[in-house]
Length: 315
Image (cartoon, rainbow, N blue to C red; front, side):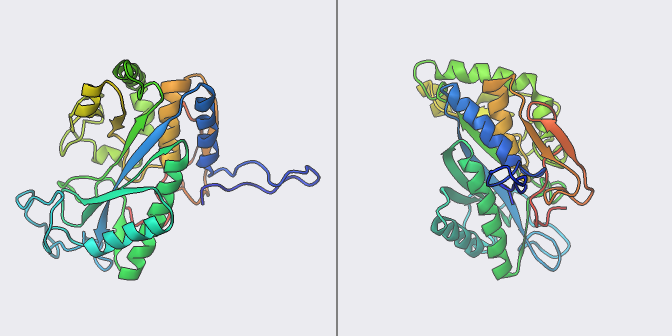
C-alpha cells in the first residue's frame, strides 16, 4: 500500500481526494516533478540487502543452531557452495519472478554472511525505482512463503556480524554531464554533509546498530566521502572519478528504509533546498511499527524514523 488516497468529497467532481497519511509516494512524486522543472532528471539505483531466516528459530538460514558459523574465514561474499550461498534457490526464484513482473531488476549477489543476500533495482528515473523496490520486497516475501522461510530487513539481525543496508545510487543531469560532473557531485555532497543528521533520522529504524564504523560502514556520528571507499558515508566509483561524470552512492540508508522518503530527501537536499512538501506517516498507519511512532514533517525536516516494511520479520 503506497499510492492510497481518500475518497473525493461529495460533489467535488474529482476521482479521488488527497493522499492518505501513510502515502509517502505522493510527496516523493511531487518532489521529482519539481526536479524535472529545474531541468534535472534524478536517476536512482537501489541495492537491497536482507537476511533469509529459519521460520522456526528466527535465526539466519543455514546457521548452526544457537551459534554462529565461522566468521569471515570462509569468504561468503559472492560465494558458491552449499555451506556459503545458502538459499540460492529462493534468491533466483525471486529474481525470475521480478523480471516476469516487469520490475527493472539489476541482479543478485550473496553477501558477507551465510543467508545474507542482496538484489538491485534500477537505474530508473524519479519515483520508478521506489515503485520497483516496494514491489520487489513484496514478491520476495511471497516467494519466502512458498519455501516456508522468513526474511528480515532489520539493519543488524545478529550482533557482531555485518548489518544490512539499502545503498542508494544517485545521479542528476548535472552529475552525468561531462566535463563538470565531478564538480556537481562534490557540490551536492557538501549539501548532504550539512544535513547529515536530518538524513540519518529518515534512513531507517535501528540504523545506529549498523552504522558503527565497522563492517564497511561509516560511524553514524561522522560524515565522509571518498573515491572507491566502502567505509565512507558517500562513495564515488573509481571509474566515475576518472570519467568526470556519473553517479555517487549513499551508503547510509538501512535495509528497512522507505525508498520514497530516501529518494525524495536526496533530491530535496541536493536540488530543491527550499521546497516544502509534506510527507506524513502517522499513528495507526499500516507503515508504522508496533510502537506506533508517528511523524508529520516536511521532507526537508527530520522525519524521526523510516517505517519498517509491512509484514517483514524485522525486530
